[in-house]
Image (cartoon, rainbow, N blue to C red; front, side):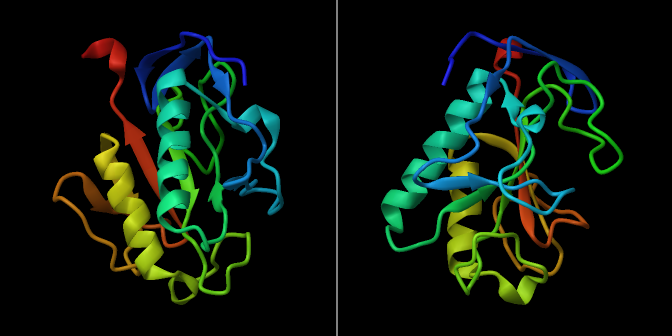
Length: 175
């Protein structure tokens, strides 16, 4: 990985990414998934974030894997584009390198997103949500059919999130 000081400009829905860091296509504890092409790995242009986001994601992945050594690798979806900006019709956000999609682990351990909430290993998924909250996520969106919970105002139910959580981190440049 090529670490560098990067910056999120603007907002998640109207922003840019400066000097972003690219998440690798896979690691021993995670794989990336392209939600449009339905395949591994996610395309290189969709795996960019601030160094702050990428470090947090990798720390959560490492802690999760250590706590659950027999669990399948985690699926990481979209972060941002290399320079941020509009991401396309499926994402109103993900524009400034502070958002990440992470797929819930499946009961059958397959390395692909669950199609329905019944395929989710809810114990592992709840632990994952809790780890993103503990890592300082400003908000974690979860699907309405998952039953996943967390601190009110931080863990929020949002349609179209029954197969993944969406974690959003605060801009460290503004704190």
